[in-house]
Image (cartoon, rainbow, N blue to C red):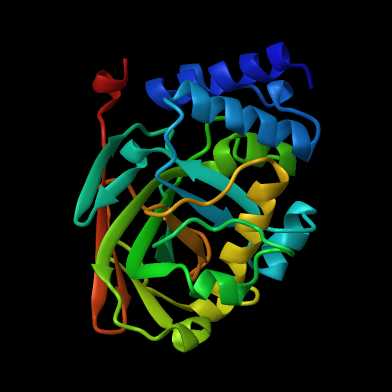
Length: 266
């Protein structure tokens, strides 16, 4: 895809992100056709939003969702500084917002992760971990429909919207592949989950991300936070609902959706 076409899609997605109303939603016909084009759009979007990347989300980390989307690998999205919120957090959103929340184990890196003589491995990632946190990923779609093909999903920053950073987790790295977690709702049924949903475990997911970025001339930096994949699947919340994620400890994170009125959306 030429730079001009990719930039035009990125600009439309940014406008939809900033206006957060149905009128600004992007038509699916505008989506790129390939995964490579989609990441090009995503990278331009990051540049347009200031170029600073405070972290990343990793999606499609389980075989089932990958198969459903026709993906051969996980997917990534960037998180600008404004997208990282300390718990407890809240946001006012329009009725158009997806209101999807996922429990996430978040890893903060203590050093840069660069490929050496070979690809980055889970062991390399383990040596770079500075801290672990309870987290909540909030997802949103800037297209007119969230029933999208894989390139549209990636171009829309893999549906990344916000990442809530909660309490630090007191866990050893050899425990990370099977950490239980509960997503508690105040207007719906609780959801039980585990890091076991993440194919290969959280550290392997970050190794994939590091190698994915390296292939695109980028790398993971010290201080960045990575949401390693959904531990609870996709949970769509009600308007004005609060969700709390509970990891062992307990270590928690909480987020509240505050839906704006129809009058405020006009």
